[in-house]
Amino acid sequence: MATQSLIPAGDYRTTYAADTTIFPTAGSRYAVWAGLALLCLAPLVLDRYWLSLLIQIGYFAVAALGLNILVGFTGQISIGHAAFFGFGAFASAWLSNNYGIPVFFAIPLAGVLTTAIGLIFGLPAARLKGLYLAIATLAAQYILQDFFARANWFTGGVAGTAAEAFSIFGFSFDTDHRYFYVVLAYLLLTFVLATNLMRSRDGRALVALRDHYLSAEMMGINLTRYRTLSFGLSAFFAGIGGALYGHYLQFVSVEGFGILLSIQFLGMIIIGGLGSIMGTLMGTAFMVLVPEAMGWLTDAVRGSALDRALSLKDNLSFLREMAIGLVIVLFLMFEPDGLAHRWRQIKAYWKLYPFSH
Image (cartoon, rainbow, N blue to C red; front, side):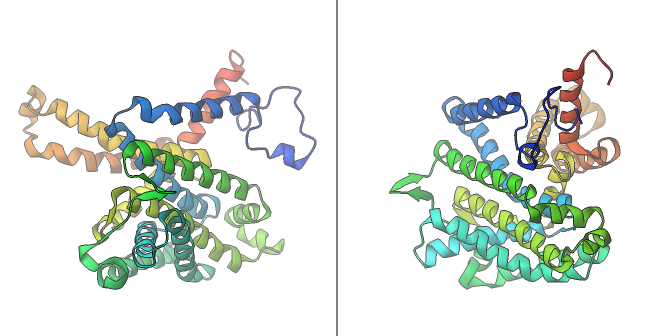
């Protein structure tokens, strides 16, 4: 119990609402408020490079959150998440460009449209599982990619399409320092929404379906409904994240939503921790920063004695791609529960120190 919640000794919960509170201790509440204050000050002290990394972490985390609901909380599988991420980007640009809908409203509407597509592709989930479901989601990846390349009316075809900058009341968020606050607002909103979802009746049904679907069905849980619903929820968050991505770059192209991005989304939730809301953000930050760290390392090694001794030369550039695959394998081997589990253990250690239990 101490490892999971770190509730102070003598603090007993008497109601279900109190037992499932998001921040069970005063320390956790203070830590969250302090973290939010630091994030709000980030554009004042960080340069454009670091802000762009934080923005990437933000919109990727929103999309990865949807995949974690599907894979981590519901026990389904999807290797086509990047396609729904791309659909959200194209849908938001399409709504704002063709119908004059402000970007402020186009982003959530893009999430709704992506939800509809996710429900359609989630229908096979009612009868498929395991490897067969993985193949079905892979088919969804290639079907949507082909749709992106051919639907000139929706995506602009292979040439791509422009996306307007986010604006509200005539104030444009067209710089990294301004758009950071937009992504931060959506990040907080979606994570609070997902956290409360998991505390609700439907959220507990999704977890029950993951743990033992036969027992869940005997308890009266409609397997078909909740399996399909999980795909819709996953697509919704992917659509929101994709829309944020599109309006940040202000241009959306089909090349950015391949199978490699889907694998990266899986890596984010595996490294962060399956079935963990906080782990989603931790894993996303890790996956975004690892390639950058490898880039700094290759720049330091290039031209050095080690480079000349091993004759690495142009092969150094491939270290960034190799690092992602290596990190996923190492986490699966040595830390299968992800960074969130390790963080809980660290907190428990310092809280219980010097006692062993």
